[in-house]
Length: 376
Image (cartoon, rainbow, N blue to C red):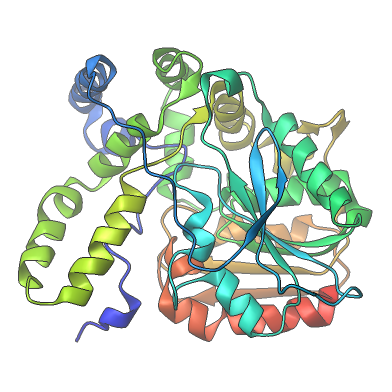
């Protein structure tokens, strides 16, 4: 029997960077040709409307408005001054940062606040405009550093998916500024395990992604990624979800939740071309970060320099970031023995951040860990 209170529509299989999965692996050359035709149609379409502004479930204020993000503060009016702030580094890999505060009862921000974390902030990454087309990974690391300094120079980082490898990079570059690090569904060692993303990384030529960025005039357009996500699981996207909707026509709550999710899912953000291609080439193809060869803000970044307590969270059925890619961090980080927690939970990728079961059963414990280990 389905528990509708944990409703996350069939979106567990979204892929942030390696989106043409069906084309590149399952459909071969014919699929690639079909994909190129679909992209040409999207490129020539003149009826593309701007996505609606994302909505946040929890009251917040904008603490900083930077080139790459708005830093949103969800804290009470008078947070305890002696507590170390928690920054939830939301994914900048396709959909809006509201994944961290999706809906009442389905919000990571809400869970952290309700379980005693004194100050919670979220990186609200901006969709890349033409003026942002030259932004690279360094630009994003630099603006995280601005945010940390503005908060007093020491924070706890909770990285979700892509936000996890970005947070780990920041912790490696500025280890004294990070009190504790949570990596949830974050691909740290991209060569670990035998997941489909690893296969895609080594089988699709970089030129394919470069062509997509060129088509977007220097950006990886969200609508291109959306087309790829849907073609990864065409039966689920084009058949099953409509059958589910038909089966629940009399369930107003189900209809409302589905409508809300589709509004979020169908409006992905655009990414700057250099940032996107660096992630493809340097992180997923060459695995430079795990190897200690990635240069961030002028220095090679070593995960061994990260000595703060670390919490690693992975999903049993996550086919976007496999458990091996997350848990490999345990042997790469310089965290002292006994200060690393590791947890495998039921469910897939998105369920790690907004699934009702994981929010109810797992994140309160992570909140307690942040308070204990990071003085949050």
